[in-house]
Amino acid sequence: MEIIEQPPVFRLPGIPDQVTYTWLLLVILTGIAFVVSRRVELVPRTSQNVVELVLLQFQGLIDDVIGPEGRAYLPLIATLGLFILSGNLIGLVPGLAGPTANLNTTAACALVVFCAYHYIGIRRHGPLTYLRHFMGPVPWWLKGPMFVIEMISHLARPLSLTLRLFGNMLGGHILLAIMFFLMGLDGLIGWALSGGATGIILGGLGGALMAAFTIGFIYPLKLLVSFLQAFIFVMLTMLYISGAIEGHGEEHGFEHD
Amino acid sequence: MRRSLILAGLTVLGVPGVALAAEGAGTGGGWIGPFAVIAAGLGMAIASGLCGLGQGRAVAAAVEAMGRQPGAAARIQTAMIIGLALIESLAIYMLVIGIILLFVQPIK
Image 1 (cartoon, each protein chain N blue to C red):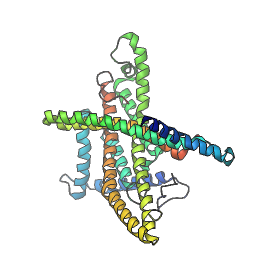
Image 2: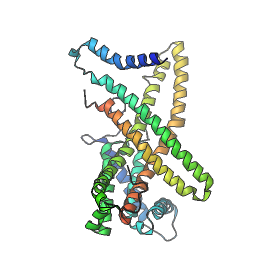
Image 3: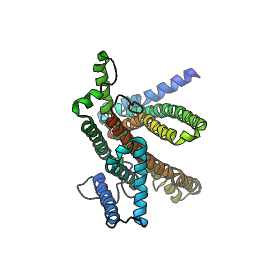
Image 4: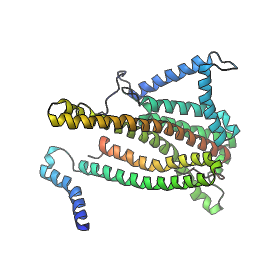
């Protein structure tokens, strides 16, 4: 990917960029949590207010999707959501790299979700009952094929979680990189600076148009996609956990894919 | 019209092979690479077009439902966004395959 994308400005030697920026995010998020939770008051002041507002959003979502018993999983869900959201957003800052635009980070998040909801389901129902849920409410001769299909469906979940986040983020980054490449010193602005009347008129005009398009349209779009993908990841996580709590037979709303 | 379209398609698909055959195999490049670029572009076009059709149907149905029952708009919107994400992931698979074909090039 180094063909078109510039490496980030701050790199640690011998450590991949996504790991560096994951550590940066860890320091930032843990720092915020530490500073805010050092002095928790009953009547919250400014910083505590903001963090409580964010966490209340997660709590409302959990109440909507899982129900009141899902509040035990607020730490898992809110951590995933905040990490993915800040990972998406830090990729938008020029000169920094977004850790979620790398397959390893998203695969790690999806594997955490995969292990977590199976663990929750097994804890809730016991291993045998949980396995029996995979067969669904069907006649006995359909139970074998149903089990295989459910297995494939469950194995496809971390794959689709991984690839959705990774593809959205990397696609946006490549789009931005191509836009900046086309209007940069190798492209239209370089043409405008090279002298010559045609170059100055066409290159300057095209460069200005492209800069306006990139900053006015593609950046807000990427911002929207960052929030949306974090929301979708969290939402699907909650749906999987809710399915594991209730057993798979009853609810087949969004379970496929 | 149709014949010219077929001719244009054959030209697009055939030119890289012919050009590479003229260049000769001695240059080291395989003949799959140029076709992989075409496959990535065509596949992404088909995938995003059909994904747009599917998402359009989903959004149309959701907006109609919201118009009929404004009270349930929040729940419908949540379900719509999840559905859109699941539909979109099919196009994202193609995007990942296209990125692999273009940048990783596992098959030379």
